[in-house]
Amino acid sequence: MAIALDRPRVASRSARTVRIRRAVGLALTWVTIVVALVFFLGPFFWILTTSVKANEDYFAYPPVWVPADASLKHYAGLFTRSSGARYFTNSLMISTLSMVAALLVSLPTAYSIARWRFGGGFLSMVLLVLRMLPAIALIIPLYIMYKLLGLTNSYLGLVIVYTVLYVPFAVWLLVGFLRDFPVEIEEAALIDGCSRLRALVAVVVPIIAPGLAVVALFSFIATWNEFLFAIVLTGIETKTMMVLVTSFTSGGTDMFYGEASASVVLGVLPAFVVAFMLQRYLVKGLALGGTKG
Image 1 (cartoon, rainbow, N blue to C red):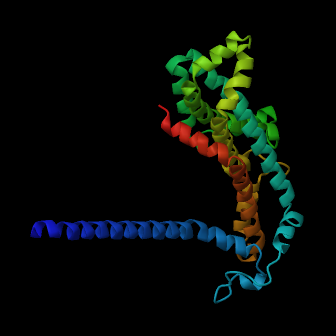
Image 2: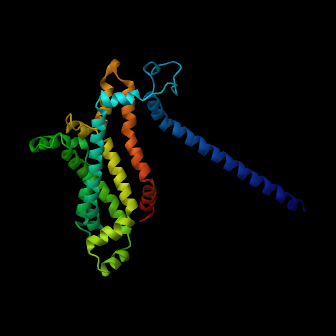
Image 3: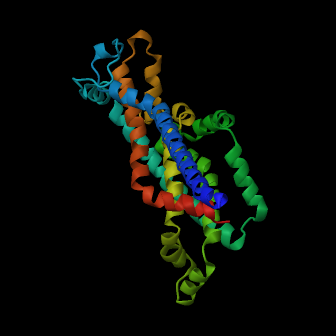
């Protein structure tokens, strides 16, 4: 009888212990998330506020976290005095063209590999090796070749470089999506009279759109953030936003901190915008790529 009476007490203590553990685990999870957000977003928040601060607030003590007299004069100075509009337009044009070119080249390449095993294992190995090559190993011969061909200081030259650099990664991703695509759906389209190209465009592409969104996002962000080829292969007319951002770090004591911070904000803004626009497809694409074999 005593054992029977003790069982509810033991069960109650066990349930209370489980609730305490869950509460502690949830609290630790939220503390970890908050610390990670402060660690990763804290510097960007500081740069964002610096871009709208007055000059005397840069080194104020105590620090001015949220300026009362915030203004956009540094952004205006970036576009008027530092030619920020030209750099921003260059980056936007080059990144967009490179993204489109990478998709146009990688999709048929991945399709041929997934459907007909084009190139066998050799082509896959070549793509992997191209992906592993460090950019610094290519820059000198590439610059010499571009100089001879007259491709320096041009959109075309940078678009070709970035397309070649990011096509292996795009093909590697798309092959996985295409191999997981049900062949029966495509065969049904072919039986209904579609050509192979029409079946690819009208049937396959809409279904693997999340995978294409992943490729587009990574290609755009990687091209936008690239610096080495952008500074070596460009001239005054074609320099990108990343070149402008780094140019502010060589100013010494005469550095324009407000304009430098504004350039950083503008440098990361397009990536946020593209990720936000493609987030619905991006989540589906990452989930599909992570669950399929």
